[in-house]
Length: 306
Image 1 (cartoon, helix red, strand yellow):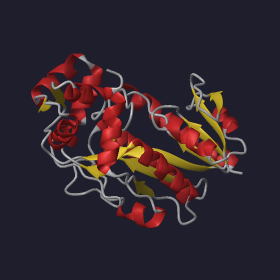
Image 2 (spheres, rainbow, N blue to C red; image 1 turned 60 degrees about the vertical axis):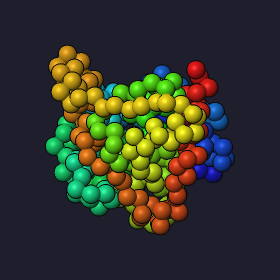
Image 3 (cartoon, rainbow, N blue to C red; image 1 turned 90 degrees about the vertical axis):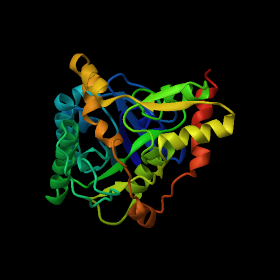
């Protein structure tokens, strides 16, 4: 029986732990608050504490690193978390599956593959780039076995927080109002469905081939203009979408640290931003959930809250 440590109980960590437990694996879910997940054992953990991390990972075959500090805390929190995770995996011989994102690639010149150059100059992208570089170096040195799964902006039933395709977007459209969004809504953008992220994490952990690499989550691509049209057509609503002016975002960032970080990564919505997951589909046999079903399931989750 596989035994796993899932670090983080958010929109990815909790359903991941529950999916693993449902298939019969032994799962511990670890967070600062001791948050629970169905079928898993809850544990309190400061993920930046190497000794505590290693103790939590005792006998684990896999560590899933799914925590995600607030944007404004990345510089302080991510480096010690990566170091503690590496130390824990090295001490316990557990494999590490890291939940990552596309930030290290920077502004893409085309569709992003697992082998695209990492050209970011933005602070958050550099932090994630450095974290995976340290993890990969530890893998190549033989200290750990590690892999990173990268997704584009997530969406799915009940997605909360700062999701660009989340509650504020769908509530506005379903109410025949205007959804205000970052960037240019008419541009193509890739969206990663939360259940598909979980599927890819599990497939990456089960993979028996070479590790020390990146996998991309199979995702759908659509402009937010088209998404609004699809939602309107399905529900008979009259929602619209409009982008915030970049100058406004930048001005808000002067007084609001979170908005400053949103503006810093808003380039992702000022150009086509597309993920290529051909290798994942071929090697891990993971396919994207059909777009229409995923979109309507997501919209329904907000519609039912009205």
